[in-house]
Length: 338
Image (tube, rainbow, N blue to C red; front, side, top):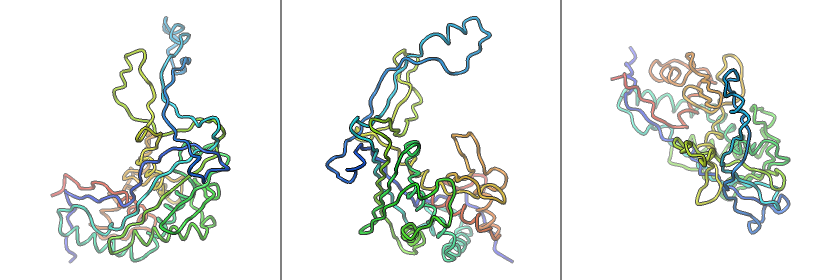
C-alpha cells in the first residue's frame, strides 16, 4: 500500500523569475543605441478641465448641473520630449534554479512525494522546455511594454546574456499565441539558456539585461506604471486623480508588472483548446476583467494535490501550468490541514 501523503499546513516556494523595475528613457530611433543621446523621462503633473463622462442618473433634478459642470482634476503624465520619437525601457531579469526545493514545508511525506514528482517533470524535459520558450517569446515580443506596445511603428528588443546578445523585432513574435513557426534559432537559443537554468540540479542563475525600443512618434505620451493609492485625499478640490510610478525620480514600470508579462504563458485554462494567454496564477485571475478562469476544478491546488498527494498523472498542459505557478512562487499551505 502506498504511503499516505499529508498536504502541509506550511508550504512556500521562492520565485524563480525575478525582474527589476523598468526604467524609461527617450531617444531618437535612428540614434537609439547611443547612450549619450538618451533623455531621462520624468513624471509631470498637469491640471486638466474635462467633462463628466461617467454614467449619471438623468432622472434626478440636479442631473443637468452635474454633467454640464467642468470636471477639473490634476493628473500625472509622462511625455517624450518633442525631439524624441522613441521610448526606451530597460530592466534586468534573473532566472533561478531551485524549484526542486521548497522554502518551507511541514509535512515529511509531502516533501518526499513532491521531490519525486518535480524531479520526474524536470528530467522529462518537455515541460520546462515549453515554458522556457514561452518566457523567451514574452521577452522577444515586448509584452512587458504593455500599453506602450500599442500603436508603435517599430519595436526592437535587445537581450544581453553575458557575452551573448540577442536582437529581436518584436512584431515577428505574436503576443496572442505561441506558434512553433515563430521559434527562430535566436529565440530557441535564449530559451535554451533559460531552460538550462530552471532545470539545473545545482544552484544556478541567468542574469539578462533587456532593452526595448518602441518608436511611438515625437512628443507622444508614454505610460509608466500607475500607482495604487488608497487615500488620495480626493475630498480636496486640488486632489490628484492619477499617480504614476517613478524610481529615483525617473519614470518607471513596476517589477511586478514586468514579471506578470513574462509569466503570461497560460493558454491551457479552457478545456480542450488553447486561448489567449493569461499570467500563471493559482485561480487564473485576470483583475482587469474581474474574472477568474480557473475555478472549476482546473485550479493550481486541484492539479497540485492530484499529482503530489494522490499520485495521479497530469496531462502535459496541466503539468506545464502547475510548474509555471511554482516558478512564480508563493505561499501554498492549507491551514485546514494538519
